[in-house]
Every structure is written in structure tokens, then in C-alpha cells.
Amino acid sequence: MNYQDYPKQVVEDIVRLRRRIEASGLPPKIVDSNLLIGSWNVRNFGSVYQEWRENSGSPKRNLRAMAYIAEVISNFDVIAIQEVKSDTSALRMLLDDFLGSQWWLILSDVSAGSKGNAERLAFIYDKRRVAPTGLAGEIVLPSTDDGDPQTQFDRTPYIVGFQSGKERFALLTAHIRYGDAPEDRLNELRNLAEFIAVEIRDRTKTGGEEKNLIVLGDFNIDDRGDNPLFRAFVSTGLMVPSQLLNLRTTYSTKPKFYDQIAWFMGNVDLLTNDRAGVIDFVDAVYKELTPRQTSYRVSDHFPIWVEFIIDRSDEHMLGTLGIDPAM
Image (cartoon, rainbow, N blue to C red):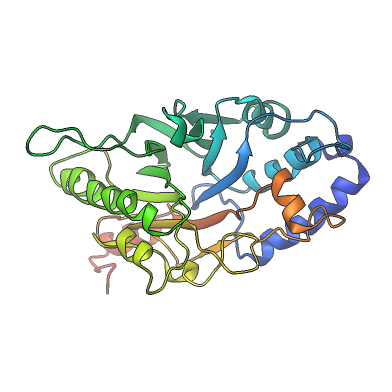
């Protein structure tokens, strides 16, 4: 990113945004040491108003907003993006004009049917740090025992395999149905949790590609506590890092916890030092606008993240010395 080409106001905002990113606890990328995984619902990520100035009409995402989105994403090794539209011009501009040639993406087709809201799911990754393993696919529910088809997800979840250093992992991202009432979301959450547990977790025991499965995205869960939606999400063993449990993931006045990162403890052998968080950018950028106005330009969701450790040198040395690393 060439900050010399940015207007002064944008650079000032980015300085404040960097302070928010640092305040979230997100560590820097360290070669051959850590792996930074994120998830972000970028509101209605489709077209771009190709000017730095604000549009005098209805609010639109412009180059100024793209600079802020790129600034956030550049801190990750790989990030799942929800609410990408059928029009991918903003996504392509993000890579071509802001992030640069060292970044690339993998994205799904548009979800079929009106309930899918013409959305895609995407992964953006830093090619210097992460590479795809070749695994990629959409999650389709199997037929019932009687051979009858099941109602599928409004927006088909998407799974992709990656490798960082010698560590392989799979990311499964989803954007669960919203619905006017929480109960409208329960079936999708239950179906996804059961599918992941039976069709993916259990299959890895016989050598499946999806070892080190991490589930992340917008699950439209209002609360991470004693809430039927959250209970459905974790009903088959998925665990959300404790560092994320009390952090809201939207700008709304009433705290919402729509976005999640989770995995099956005991089925992931990636190392972690228990660092995870949320980047709250409200009032750091577009200080002249309300949070609601900002949400149409950047997003109404905050990015969430988890750090994993890919440096196993200490573990290897202890093993060489005949010491159990778990002790």
C-alpha cells in the first residue's frame, strides 16, 4: 500500500486504526513463528464508488473505505470474508490496488435462491505466509436415511485447506441465516454443528484432509452465554476461545456476538498461546460520521482473530532430550 497516494485525512484515520489494532492485542506477523487467522463480515461487499471523496447521495463504499479495509486485512495471514456479493469488483480492487500481488483469494460461487442474498464466501491470504493445500468444497447436507433430500443452507458454507510452514489446517466459513426471530436460525446452526462433527471431525480419524479444522464466520448468534443459538453451535463439541467470549462483534448499541471462531479441542494440534480478540474500529475512522453511516462504508461487524504458533522448535528439542513437552 502506497500511503503517499492517500489523502491526509485517510492517513490520519489509519494512524488511529493502527492504534485500535494494537489495542486489540493482535500481534505482528513473525516469519516461521506464528499464524494469524481472522474472520470478518464486510457489509455488502460488492461494488466500489471509485473516488476518495464522499458520495453526496446514498452512502457507498469508496476508495477511502477500501484503504481502511485493506489496512485491517493486511495484518492477517488468512482471513475469511462473509457477505461478498456476486459483483466481485470491490474484492478484486482490494487485491489489485491496495494489498498487492503477494495476496490472493479463494471464493465460492454465489449461493442459489433468493434467501442466499446473492452472496459468496471468500478467503483472502498472504501468499508469502500461507498456501492452499488443494482442498476446497461447499458443505451440502446428505439425504435422510429414507433417501429424501434435506433443506440446504441459505448460504452454502465453504471449506478450504491451507498450509503455513509445516502446519496444515482447514478453515470452514459460514454465514448463517439471520431471520427476524432467533428461532429462525436454530435449524441451520444445529445442522452445521452436526455435519461438522459427524462428516468432518469423525472422518479425520480415518485420514481425512480436514485435520486441524477451524470453524469461523458470521453465525448470527446474539449471545455467547446461556443462549439457545450458542448452545446449538457448541452442541457437538465446538469450543470458542475464552478470550472471545465477552467481546461484542458489531457496532450496535446492544452488544451482539454474531461472529465466532471455534474448533474441537483435542482435534486440533496447532499450538496456541491463548491470544484472540476483536478489532473495534468505531470512531477510529470516519470520525465525522455516525457508526451507522460508517457501517455502510466499512462494515457493521468487527474483524475477529486468533493467533496460532507454528514454531515447534522448543517441542522438538524437548523431544530430542527425552522430555515430554506436555509436562
